[in-house]
Length: 143
Image (cartoon, rainbow, N blue to C red; front, top):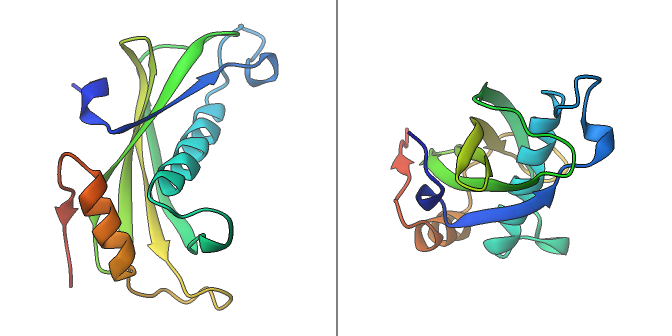
């Protein structure tokens, strides 16, 4: 089972009213918005922000829902790199309320050349930063 201690990055957020459905729980698609915030914070932690942002395109997104968050809950969005490929990377995602796992999932991104949207190899500097940041080395798959 996924634990908070599996992750070096845990970004705190508070659930806002507009993210909840008529049942009073977070509407399922909003967990992907939380994942996106987590990815932004992960890249910032690696030193990629502002002008240094890399070009990535999402090619796969998945989530498994375990429990519901509700309005005004404090949640933590957890991110770690689970896999580094030649042109893509997969980030493992999880959302916790205190120690309770609410949602877990994964986002796979393909790196692209800026402006051309042509897939390209992950930059060596990114790979080095990921490997230095992660306490559990990501799976490596290179063609």
